[in-house]
Image (cartoon, rainbow, N blue to C red):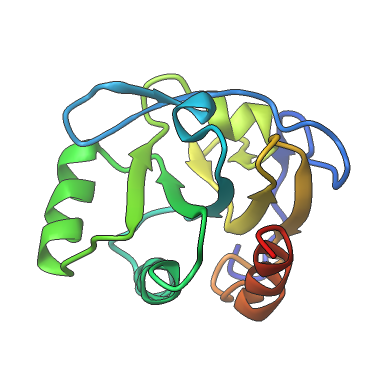
Length: 162
């Protein structure tokens, strides 16, 4: 982060393994789990905070592509409060990207190894799960201020619905 090393805690997501279920919350503080998106390919966009420049770009980029992805949902997960996520979604007219918060339990962050030790934030990255929740792509972005490899994530997701 800013050139300084960080430690991620939790279980590293590994391609080929079954993705763990997790519980996050939506704008209205309703619990949402991975199973709520059963039968779909899932692109999980992980960001530290939607109110920062790179996180905003990442969220909007996945929003722009989401509408063209058949049988696929995009989940953007951060530890932002749901109220901030709702505001951001409204201000940016998001319709194809589910903004979800891990602030209550940090369940996603720990289950997928994105929790930054000592900061209670999530590192930047992307996870693609197939319709059976098997992990097909993972990227832990090495520098938090760098965008993920969108093309690689989209390419994998597209192969899962052809």
